[in-house]
Length: 509
Image 1 (tube, rainbow, N blue to C red):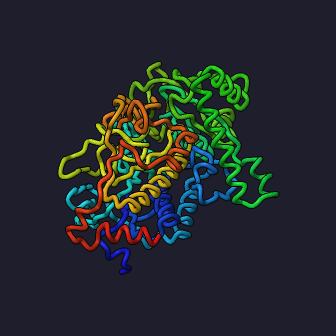
Image 2 (cartoon, one colour):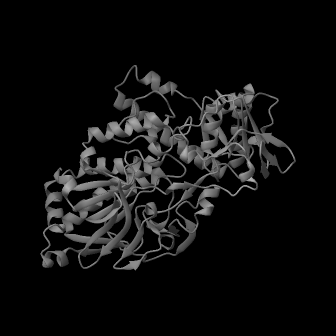
Image 3 (tube, helix red, strand yellow):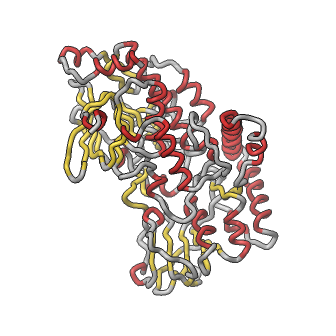
């Protein structure tokens, strides 16, 4: 067994080996190569969401030039990549940075405990049905906010009477054969609009049943400008240029949607009419909310629209009255015949992968804590939580968070700081969660789970890359809202595996 896997104390522990966790480890390797770290992953493979979700057609809902890492160019031509391609990208990145030997699979973190006297975190970890303890000076939670055990499944009236199969995309059955079958996909979000065209290729008929419409935008499957630039420039240069352009376009679209919603809605309708033709009823794509009150869904080359226009798929907007043996009866009285029902009804959210959090023995209710700079939790020392953007690519923010964390670790070394803890000094608490800008059902259901944000300063979550980039990359680290304590307590205790070693490795880095 390697030294990495035989150790129980680390300078940094990363929880989660998905997109955020692999990226976090790469940043540590790039910027602080002397640190001793490990990645704890509850499953037996890296990839997180992109390894767990295996439903037909699964793909990114952000362009890969911004969904990919800042330091690792995405070189495939597809703008929206499929799940297997993203998993391969993550695995390749991990190999390039020698991460496999640092990943501990089958390690489920059940509890985080901070000891003020020892100035370290103790993590209670379940491994092969047994509990063990690992410790670290700093922890990075990279589990995202999904409940990986359960998706959101409404209690449909009469569902037990249905003679066919009801499946949730989060746990897609490998043996599900839908060729020649009648399929109803319940939902209107990114998962549903991905499933419908993918299943329509072989199913007898696919019907998308939605309670309320969603804004859907078509984007090219292949970026024409990037394709032309690749003939003239190195791949890294093309990636940087495409990434910068798409960051600007994402921001422009979002800000326009907030300031001129009617104009943006008209543009969306024009695109939908182009794909669907003059006779299609666009009321199925006219939500009650303004653009970007919920996340805007994108489809490559109008694949959803093309499936609808061809007749291989249909769309119905109505409420479910009840299930019957052979289908679903709607509130209007219409019946949708079905052999298979896919309940793409959303996700359940949780924080810290469901683990408990304690600081000096006192339980911490994450939903009552604010986030500092979108990086740390109020009153919680030496810990970062990676939250991506809700109005742009997740990875844009995840990269910035880790750049800031690496800067913070260097600052702690230079100043001999043993712990840092955000404390509210000015301003107030907002009732909004960190995802307060979205009105999606899964966000509203998680109001009692997600952390809060403040009314001003470093406690507000702006979801604005052009604001966050200079702040997190170059902004001052000395802040009255960040309480710093020296590491003298541990040095007096003479503990051999603690901050003294931590600082020596940082100096070597």
